[in-house]
Amino acid sequence: MPKSKALIVASANPPDNIGPKRNARAIEAEWDQLTQMWLHGRPDSTCEIYEAPIRVFRARVSGKRIGEVTLLDLQNYASDLIAAEEKPRTISRKLSTIKSLLSFCHRTGAIPFNVGIALKLPTIPDDLAERILTEAQVQQLIKYGAANKRDGVMMRVMYVAGIRAAEASGLRWLDCQARDKAGQITVLGKGSKTRTIVLTPKAWAALLSIRQTSNKPDDYVFSGPTGKRIDRTNITHIIQAAARRAGLEAAVSAHWLRHAHATHSLDHGAPLRLIQATLGHSSLETTQRYLHVHPDDSSSRFIHG
Image 1 (tube, rainbow, N blue to C red):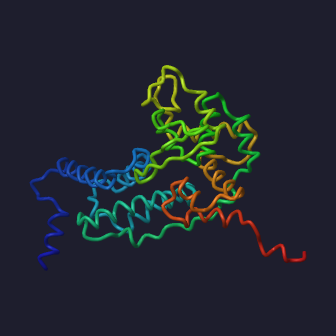
Image 2 (image 1 turned 90 degrees about the vertical axis):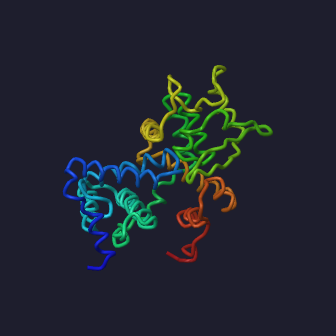
Image 3 (image 1 turned 135 degrees about the horizontal axis):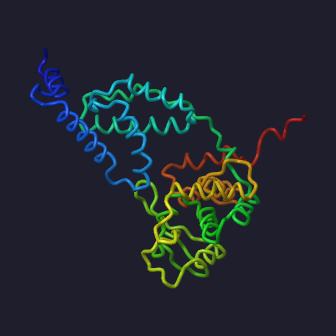
């Protein structure tokens, strides 16, 4: 047996004098360490999203070191998600999370092979067009759906600024600065990248209207009675409930306000590069999706029928 293979076998199988409990703890410690290394430097909101599928997958392959995970393990996990009737987009996100972790471990030399490369992700239908609210629907959502003033202001700011739920959750008063006749906010986005967004005078005035004299600069803008920020998941629940109250039949989520911002900005002539910068897209291709689902023109105008 070649020396390299002998080393791999030896590392994958603990010595006989290591008991099952001790070995199990060593396996768990390895998963913990590698996962934390992989998540290092990512925003808390991103870590929360990634950690959930990792926990489920770890439970499914309990007793295996990360280097012992097989393609069949990944395929069985995918089958579990399909059997649970998860949406293709959700399945793809969860599987991509596992694949990303395995790729990281392989790049760092923690595992000899990356079996995740062979796992095929489900095809995600491009249903973006179905998740675009009209300007009238957005105003209907804000005016008639909000359960209180704070929620109405939060939805208005999320729409006007095109920010994510996690970015709204982390917004503090020190991130809000007056500018000319209105103001601006600075948010922490994906990849720990910050960006500053100018608000309309109406949105800025609405934001200031919920600030209390007792608020300190490092207090969260959108918080509960105890001052604790509203987390990303609760923001989505708030907006879903608001949509029902406003009489919108679609299953509206927080991200729909971001889609609406991009689409309506294009409608009013905003340059793609400016929309990309405002939304914090790393690639212009992501922003260009809104052109495809909401084109300005079509050859269908030249068809008689």
